[in-house]
Amino acid sequence: MASPVVFGMEDILSLLPHRPPFLFVDRITKFSPDASIAGERDIRPDEFFFAGHFPGKPIMPGALVVDALAQTSGLLWGFSKRARGGETADTPELFYLAAANVKFVSPAYPDETLELVARADRSFGDLFLYNVEATVRRKVVARGSLTLAMMKGSL
Image (cartoon, rainbow, N blue to C red; front, top):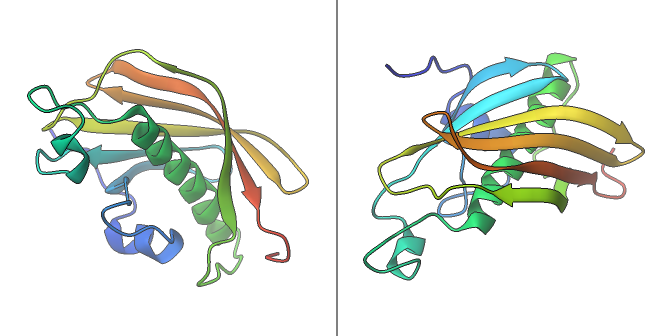
């Protein structure tokens, strides 16, 4: 059974600067402003990275799983800002800065749906910390913490 869609591709594209093939969130299925967000990414067998990662046994690269989690975290920030009545600029304001304690537990394969969750942890100044987790059918693929940073002069 498919998850209900809270925000679709058009909404995602209105906030994220990413575009295919480097857009790794297909839809948002849950959203609680300033608290948490859940999204999904359908892992398609024809993804560009599977040609070399790895021929005969393709898995989604861990760096791209983390990027999907960073994009999901950025969407939590952006949709929360919108929910508070704030304007969202046409240019990106928040950038992926760092990952901490990210653990890769199991691989994600073609034809699976990567479930992405980000929870706001805390912020200080222009830094925003998120606890993140990627799963496939409730099996953990990766989890850890990410930091996003505000670009100087973008507030």
